[in-house]
Amino acid sequence: MATAISTTSSLSSILRNHQLLTPSKFKFTPLTSSSPSPFPLHCPKSISIFTRSNFSPIPKSLADDITSPSSPTSTYPLSSYKNLKSRLQNGETLYGLFFLTFSPTVAEIAGLAGYDFVVVDMEHGHGGISDALPCLHALAAAGTAAILRVPETSPAWAKKALDLGPQGIMFPMIDSAKDAKEAVSYCRFPPAGIRGSAHPIVRASGYGIDDGYLNSYLDELLIMCQIESEKGVKKAGEIAAVDGVDCIQMGPLDLSASLGYLWDPGNKKVKEALRAAEKAVLESRKDSNGGGGAYLSGFAMPHDPPLDLASRGYHMVSGATDVGLFRSVVVEDVKRFKASLMEEISDDERRDENDCDEKYWSE
Image (cartoon, rainbow, N blue to C red; front, side):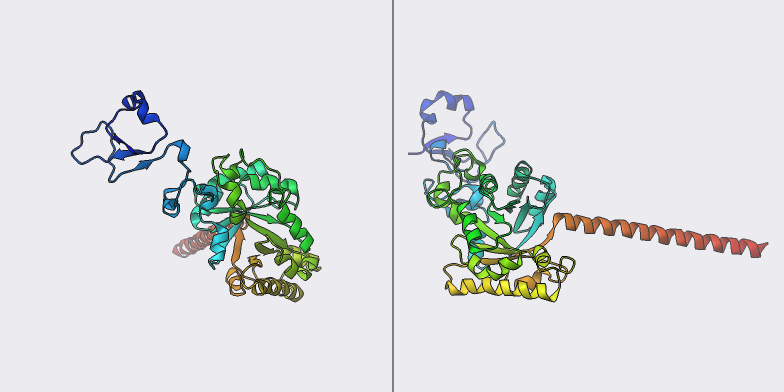
């Protein structure tokens, strides 16, 4: 039975009443407009407060989706908010950003700008695990899903990345179904895989607060394998069909280098290889009759813009990098200022010439 506490009750009186401190469900009695209160608080309706014994931390926006605080599925905010995997299953096309600066401020701006996901890139960015964590904090504050790209496909990197609690993990240079199976095994706890376990104390489980983590972590984790070599393209269908692979990320730059066209990623042969891999991945989903196969994920290029990727069946599209966006803006800003300055100097020179001409003729 709920114990009624007036919002006018003092903290000391509550602490003196031991019955009020037993593990039970409290209920606050709302104030009326005429109720005297020493606190500047007005509750328009009743507020239910749960003690730690039966409370699972969850944003208010998700409260309606929870039927029971003791549900075996995870209700922790890190894993539930705007889940990428469920959004893909609902047929959404998601737009994201690759993030290499490791600036929490820039990460938060990216999240607030409205990107569906941000790939924190530990492969080509300068940062590692300790640099990635503040960026994940910033993205979580902005309500944006984070994906961690690891620098290599290894159990150690996967373990450290997954313990941070991203919604997705991206493995580079996957060239075969065997590589993909190994990557998936790095994400699964024994006996299904070889992921090291410290789930009671890491961020992924809310430092042990999320009791449902072990029951739901695979349902909520997006496992992405990158195909970015000639060998990988030939095995694209087999890689996409591996159980546990949720998404195939195409790597156009490494692919062009693999084919001998490092300086020409828009080369016809690179495009042909890319299209072949795309077709194989899309067919893997058709062959599974909706029960499996991987989604397509890609990075836009000047010759292959984001909308073109979406029109070819990509469900995850990254349109830029934070470095690239900043570079373009600052270069353009400097050019614009210097061009305006030169125009101003030219205008001054013309005015000076006109003044000299007028002075000459006036003499």
